[in-house]
Length: 496
Image 1 (cartoon, rainbow, N blue to C red):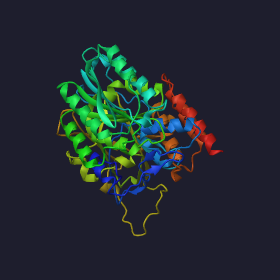
Image 2: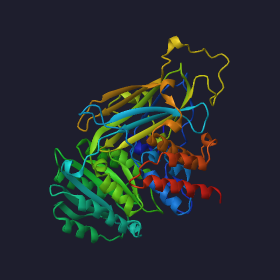
Image 3: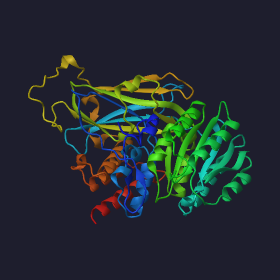
Image 4: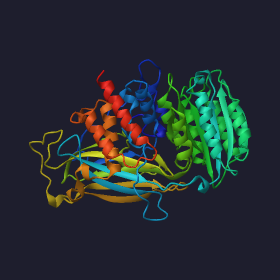
């Protein structure tokens, strides 16, 4: 199982010998992983994974492409590219349900005869004024490595956006770390914006990085102003270079998990290039029941900290796990696209002690399986002595069965949502699918193409672009049009 599949494995990264992947011309580090392979349903019919709402990979990929660089495959997590965009999957049927789930089956655009099972999860968006009171601690890396325009200066402008969106009953604290931890601002009401902004502006880079001491100070302040029925979260902003003070990762892991159990979450905002440690960023966010984002521009800061504030700060469902049981009577093979670092063992699905990803207010989560229907040409030849699966041994109206487990934000026992995945009666050409489905498939193809996936041999950049254009829709934010521009850049780099 990949090293970052669960927060509990943070301490095992070093022991398992997963050497960080070095991006050329820099010391940026990403966890290495192999893309999911085709699974034979007769041998392994069940797929289980934790959801992922992080968007780090998309923002980092965009930055490199805009600089004329093709990202290394390990920097590309396809699910994070897909989940960067918002999709309209509809509201929950029940008022007390934290999210709605939808399933669509379409034809694959890159492998004739195959189908794509598109699973969408959507939680209702909450306006800022309806969010519970927030107790936020900004834990800011002010070490010497942050002394570039795309790091601390951008960080200050990013957090200024958050401060200006705060309400009078919110509080903000600021903790810095560089050699030793320091409190730059005690808990301060959101009404005192000038005071908070002045404390931000006064921050200067210098010294080495002592991440663990800063985290301890941040949690102490978060506990000092704890809101029982509110949002309690530490926002760690750094380039990910924890080079001093984390000699005992097990102790850091225990601290973050302990505070998570006490109701204080931790999210991570990454900045800059050169020594960006994605492995640490992902592991800390997972351990803290938070999400990881990469801020490469003022526009991205506005997206994460203003437009998506509810999702960044407010958790509506915890430990969300997905399990699909494929029907051997109708499906011979399947492949999960992305989520390689979030895979779970089959028995983990029903084990409420196993941690998984969380969904924030307004988050949409997408997962796509490529399947080979029974009788179609797959990646594997049928076995000479394989026993045929008859209609009597499986429901021929279903490709499979979807199960989603989740916990309420303050719950310890999971709840279950079940949905059948209907077969040919609900399978349509991709051209007939809605715009969200077509666009998500285009992004999935884009990510696989950047990773040099052999599964995309039958689809070129022009095909991906045409599919993205067909799924662009109204695109009020302009982000889908921006993605189409990235396709053009990636295509051009391939031709160099």
